[in-house]
Image (cartoon, rainbow, N blue to C red):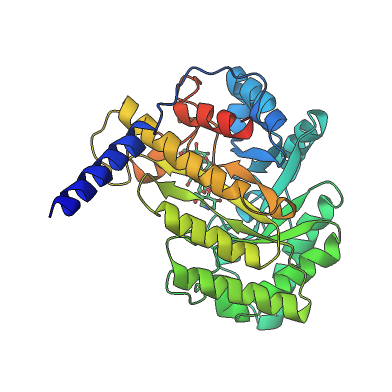
Length: 352
Ligand code: G3I
């Protein structure tokens, strides 16, 4: 009995000791040097052109902190081919020129998705051969336009449902499951040097979805279908997925032997859309979650670290508040472009 009590006291003491070692992370760390300078792999953001064009502080921080840019919207089919056969590259070219001028890599996002399609594509009528010609023309015109100038493409985005079945997109409906393989082959033919990614979300939270996607990747690898990387979107929150689920997902992904992109990282602090204040407690919990994600990624073999992309720069340009109609604070900088503890935590871990 005494032994048991001793054990409980020891356990309690260890617990207290562990809790007190979760050091507070400050939000006041210097922004120079930027994150990219400290990192051996690319660190980037999804770029919003309105902010890049009209908000000098956004542009300054983007340029100072990040080495890789993903267009948040302007490379999607609704932007690049708004009318059938009429391609609009002006804005995309402008972003590419900005990236070139400032020494940033560009990650193309995305060739095929079920959202942000132009109406004419959604309404397209034709035989399977005509659908394939339409898909081929979009992919090859777009990839061909940027040939040799982009690091990589998200070829197909969000192809799976949560239960692991293929999502019923217009592509699947008209071309069957093989549309994914076709997309990769056409993209590769148009730019053999570009890395081609399959990108999806909830892969840590949903093992069935992950298994289905990774099985497809393995099948492509066996049959020589050109696939060069996987994108694990990381739209996560403080509690879900758990750290262990994120770790398992990264371990599984590493076994594929392909570069891994943590492609759309943001950490929601208000997934249940409550009335909240973003206080120090939430900021610290967010920093700890971010620290877990980064340290798990740092354990991935260096050759597979394609990079980490935040889905936005600051809480001001995050897609989450407007998309879900709720208050949220998911990114590295606050709405006044001040650093948050998560930013300082990233700095500390990149530069131990
Ligand atoms: O272009 C119009 C503009 O003219 C208008 O003034 C403005 C008013 O709200 O809306 C603009 O369109 C919005 C567009 O973003 C550009 O800001 C759309 O309404 C809005 O729905 C669209 O949201 C984008 C969303 O994809 C669409 O599903 C987000 O910005 C973009 O960050 C988000 O990104 C996706 C990834 O591509 C794939 N993974 C999920 C991720 C989050 O949904």
